[in-house]
Length: 62
Length: 394
Ligand code: HEM
Ligand code: HEM
Ligand code: SF4
Ligand code: SF4
Image (cartoon, chains in turn purple, brown):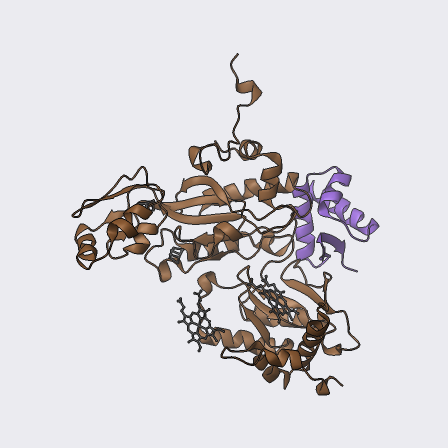
């Protein structure tokens, strides 16, 4: 299940320049806390980075 | 090119009897061109009455979303050495206890990768290191990390928790502030380093109501030491104060905010159920009075500076909570609050503002706490509890 979501999150991030995890969770129709958990894992693996522009955004590391 | 710039306005700040940051920075500027540019840019700002720093967010180190604050000069041609001048936050130890060796070690790394300028400490509690380039961030972080330091929080995350010196130095400490602060910092590493929330969240821990870290004014979540039984009175010491001419009635009894004390010239007595544990009498007669035996903490919520709404002081959420490792009760409460705030909060809305918008009774219901009288600041002042329609027995 979490492998599934992981794939969905990576796919979503691939389609946008940057996103708030709130918006990503809403668009994927998932719980924000589940999406956040995946994003944290990806961040620790160096695959996702955070931007701070008034609030926090995440994006794939290019 | 910038060497020959003059700084007549800044030079004014070297006059007078006090230490001057301008003098310090001029000294540092001899070996750090960036510091020279900071001074020159500041001189320009003084002349024009206009700031020349730009915020920018797109800086950080691998795996972290907080701890680095992007700063750029908006006049990079004129001040090339501060074109990038980012701030790093280093998470301070509990209670800000360092050995001088540890401080030198931090400065050695900062001298290598940054401007050498520091601010000990920022409002969050962190060691603030002012001024480095985007390129130097990762190597600086790596070296700090190898030495056992970590970045603190910034942005929409948990900010570095901070606490008073507590039991290390202070007889008033009702809780082990240092351990609580350290324990919560370790527990919530994800929340600290990977910003996921509507906005920032601060935890501050004070050992007693003197609140030396001003948690009530500065933290979203304040943990303040208190006691549940009665404060200790050493009658012989009370009489010693009186014999030395101390005005117990005027300075202590009449200043008690809840009229809990009585002094008949021989004995000081207390109505414990009236005492609000404010610390006034203990502060005035520390040799005679001390905190009670059955210690714990009051948990308060919602303090913050002006952002969407005006400044708030935090208010009581849990009047008394035992505080013993591993502090599961307080951790559970924090997680519930965060979940609720994250689910309901708007961008840049602090938890206190959300409670204000949604109402305290909605907040209490959603996190599963019962309303208690201690949550009311003064009768009729904040009557935020009403029955739910389904509770009314018609
Ligand atoms: C070698 C130099 C210095 C030494 C040894 C020193 C020592 C101390 C000590 C022992 C305290 C009392 C701390 C406590 O309450 O436990 C103190 C407080 C203080 N010092 Fe210094 N100090 C030095 C330099 C300075 C300088 C240069 C400044 C200002 C630019 C300064 C500003 C203050 C202030 C404002 C407090 C009060 C802090 C408070 O009440 O929160 N000190 N200092
Ligand atoms: C005349 C020069 C400056 C003055 C008088 C000044 C004053 C202040 C004050 C009063 C604070 C609040 C500190 C606190 O509440 O603990 C602060 C925070 C801060 N300053 Fe400055 N500042 C100066 C220059 C700079 C420069 C040159 C930078 C960076 C390029 C900078 C970056 C920051 C940052 C990042 C904070 C936030 C620290 C925190 O909240 O933890 N400041 N400054
Ligand atoms: S808050 Fe209380 S316990 Fe902590 S240092 Fe101040 S007086 Fe002591
Ligand atoms: S702690 Fe405060 S409220 Fe309690 S008796 Fe002393 S002065 Fe009064």
